[in-house]
Length: 594
Ligand SMILES: Cc1cc2nc3c(=O)[nH]c(=O)nc-3n(C[C@H](O)[C@H](O)[C@H](O)COP(=O)(O)OP(=O)(O)OC[C@H]3O[C@@H](n4cnc5c(N)ncnc54)[C@H](O)[C@@H]3O)c2cc1C
Image 1 (cartoon, rainbow, N blue to C red):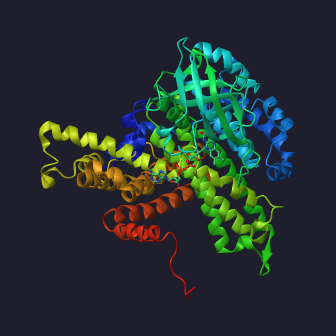
Image 2 (cartoon, rainbow, N blue to C red):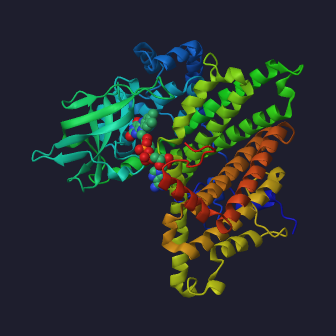
Image 3 (cartoon, rainbow, N blue to C red):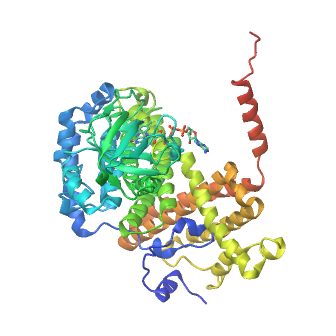
């Protein structure tokens, strides 16, 4: 009865990735899909060699431009010669397959490259990232052979730069409401009309992935490849932005543009799916950039805190500085672990990882925001001065929580997608005669009951084990297992209470999403730390194990709070105060009457 995680692991044998399964969605059912978590992914040796060469050339080139990034930021532009050099370095062909003259990198390597550029400059990462992550990704995912052969070689060299055109003045988060139209003509061509706003790379892009409504204003969305050269295309002035100022952002207008029939991307009417698939699949690029930004902040902050003396000692000796450095490190470690797992799902052809991708986007972007804030605080007044990089990093990192799906919309997506799966499962059980919806006492606990059973059947400790986890992480793993059960119990209770009305319950959905994020991030951290222990041994991994423990303890505190507040909360008061303030249209109190 003294079975260990090691024994259980041996009994189960090697684990293979389940391409149909979603780890995050399964958590709603109280299930941990271990085969999609262990072993932690790695970049193939062959690819590593090329990757190292690319990283070296990036370091060599960007290190010399550190001062220039301040000027690019002030001017709000990257000089043409600078962009040309990025092209020469191969940075526009990172994910283009080798047969089309690109480097053919996996998403893991692609993210690692953007991590490197992200260490130097957010705008540089964005210019490259908007091209590969969203601008031309639709062509890779949905393009036919003829389209790929026509465009990919030129996109690989940067002869063509790509942009993604979805947002309009009246359509941001609600992407399904776009007004741009494409009308099919008798000769099979399309007439494209409409205006897209805030298009990254818009000022100089030559290749646009454009989303438009086909078959009139009520029609479904379709995606098109549009070339700048064609008549009727114009771009507006460059936007003057808070951050990532050197990257190019502008309006792109289409006035009766004739689009050849062969430039429809994917199937007619399936444009929404094309757009969402692009955004999902492209998330590791943004994640890589965020991790790079965090690593740079940690490098800057440790140097600053070691050099700066106050009260006769380097400030690095004070606990409130150490607390920040640790927090920054733990967040970066978790974000990197998440980002690599998601890139791996994309590389392996997993078909259902959109919830995990949303989690890594939210986590990575908020972690960078917090890390940049801490780094600036450690730098004190210097952090506020333009001659230091901190304020620029803070400005640059703010946009990440807004574009490629706002973090609010993605949180709702995580919760509602998870609820949908769990709801369907419960309905299936209901159909099989269990009468779970009509008999609240007998029927309750289907999800958590299943999870509890699973977690109690194997061991004398009263728990199944995450077999892939290293025994040194036993305590942390047990905590995660326990919270998966509690989470599925909460999911079931919410579903029974609200049914379909859960769609309107955003406070609750947010708590469920945040718990999903904490659980999946904890699992990613356990997987990565296990891998490091296996490689480096117990002796060499004390810091990694401490980081894992700190992350999971923090997750526990947040999950406790979120799960408890599903039942006991001030949601009604919260709504009431907001409604009162909306009615006033301002903060209505003052200590004097005017
Ligand atoms: C610098 C920059 C670059 C960009 N690059 C591109 C690009 O290359 N291509 C492109 O197509 N677009 C691009 N965008 C657009 C970007 O994707 C959108 O700004 C984003 O999707 C949000 O849309 P919105 O700004 O209209 O905000 P809105 O949708 O109006 O949202 C405003 C606020 O309301 C919240 N909100 C909205 N709906 C709900 C809801 N149902 N429940 C709760 N909260 C809600 C949002 O989370 C947000 O906080 C870019 C934007 C910027 C600023």
